[in-house]
Length: 369
Image 1: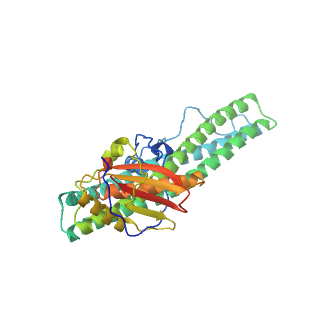
Image 2: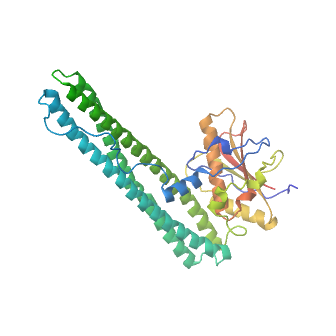
Image 3: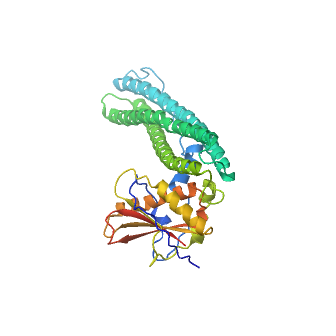
């Protein structure tokens, strides 16, 4: 049975950076339901810790290169020797990039593991309850923040490596064009063309390998950046819990439980028609600081109704673009992370999306039942 709530947040709040969320995760606010898959933030955390993007560590060497030197004594034979030397240098460079990527992945995984251990220490203290503003817990939080900064710092070397690989891809493409253009040179014998064919095959493989490493690095950078952004929001939620000495209600639900796909609110999106929001968060400017007001309102709701559930509705202006709708959903995703970070079990939170002609900015409406 729905609980009629009379608590209303005092202020209508405003915006943070938007994040992208897959449309498949979002049912409409008309009552349609959808199974909740792992959020981008959860996927990105696991990827940042484990380094799952595929990339080779060395080039493919199945295609043999022709022997060095001016074996045929022709002008084309000398060109083959030059191209072979350039290709050897490129292949060694690509091998180095692959090894460097694996080393950076190892460093990133180590940094993420250290950070997660520190966060677990903070959560353990808050789970059993402690004094508000406990300096020991604050020290643990500061350690976690420092380690999260290290995770962010690890993105720098990865970006530098991406620039090097981009150069390898460019060189590989230029070299492949040079090999192909050498077929038209006059004065070649049959062996010269056979050697060019071998070089072309090896250069094609080198280009493909370099491109694979490029894609893997770019994905790694994207995942790590999103992971850091998500965890900064979680650290803010933890700081609020430290100020109060405990999570909002009961033990916090870990990220792994959320990722397991437990459908929030039993998987059903409750109707919000005729209901008064507990909180309206209006995202009309950058860097909205809504966590304090959200914590206060949710705490009061849970004190009055210990088994209360929360319905989050992403509201975008009617007639808005798909980008606006995706941004609005991203804001709701952020608010949900704030609630779960404060200790609200994920299975007590539902999310949905709708549009309204009465709103001028992207908003997140939070209802209690």
